[in-house]
Image (cartoon, rainbow, N blue to C red; front, side, top):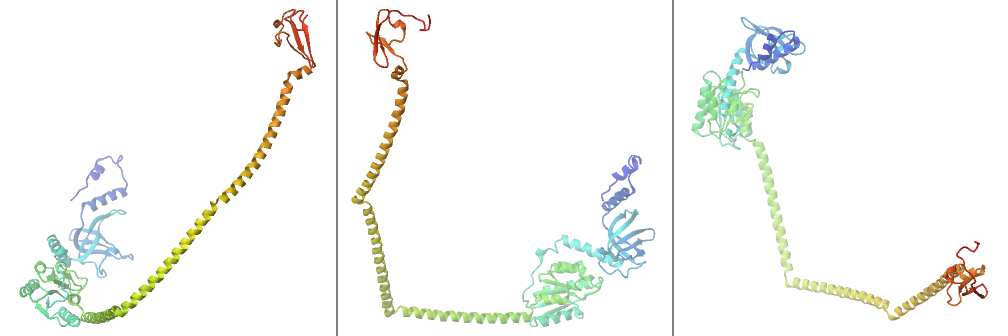
Length: 465
């Protein structure tokens, strides 16, 4: 069991001023310690202070000779009738210990409530269930399949009980042709478990059944207890015959149910499981017969069609039919050949027309005419271009003449200037140092020229004295 003492020790040893907590926190921590420190348990005691509020919850106390504990049994946990529960009943309560934080009440939260005597049996039931489960007796891979149509059915039950009557009635209704072997045994009381195990062993030894029904009618937990005994469980587990457990009603669960290959809700349900429904088999047989007849008709129809097809093939293979087919084949070939020739002629005609068009396009006469038209066009363009060029050049010549005339020496002479040159050498004089006194000079005027002899020169401007 886990213990949680650190928090409580801290609360007791630390100064209350430094580590003070609220009452709610204290109750919360105490609740956590109780719920985590104590596992779910069974508690036995006498009911007292029973209260049934309108909410449906039950509140009571469980007490013994020296102590009591408050209990809360909430409505959603209640699985069976609790209307007869009263003060003074000796009960077994299963649940967890907790604290109701609002009041700090220590209480047991009940999850299951049983009468004390029945509770002891349930504890034994749970112990055996855990033991057998740990040995693998409940494993699914150990389960055997029931036969589809057993040759003989064995029933282990009381020969005078209601269960055998229900089983036989159902078997007679569903499939009366299957025989039933009853292995009589007591199904209630201290000796019943050994008898049930012995009856199962007898069925195994005799090897006369394909499936075995083990069960009885309904009753209290004590009445059904033989089917919770270990000897019965091991007899069922070791049985090589598939076993159907049919103990009590649907709500009754026994160890035999877990060990058996199949669990039936009731003995009648077990009888329905082990045999097919004869009426259903008859319906299936009728359906199968109709299907066979339909398949037979289809087969005959297919054979008829095959014969007809073979007859047509035989007729088609006769010499007359062969000649007719070849004649038709030749007629088709002639039509195909005629169409091919027409198509070829048409194709060739289109080719000739295309060549003729190309020859016309490349004819010398057409080329000459096109050349003449191009020549006329070029002559027109040449004349136009020549005229435009002459006019442009005349305009440029006029502009150049005007420009030349503006800078021409003759124009300068027109304004009263003259050109002086050495009369002997003809060199144009631009400086007085180029001529000496006594030399002959020639001056060209606007109209005519003058010759003269130099009487003197000077280096200064003409306006200087």
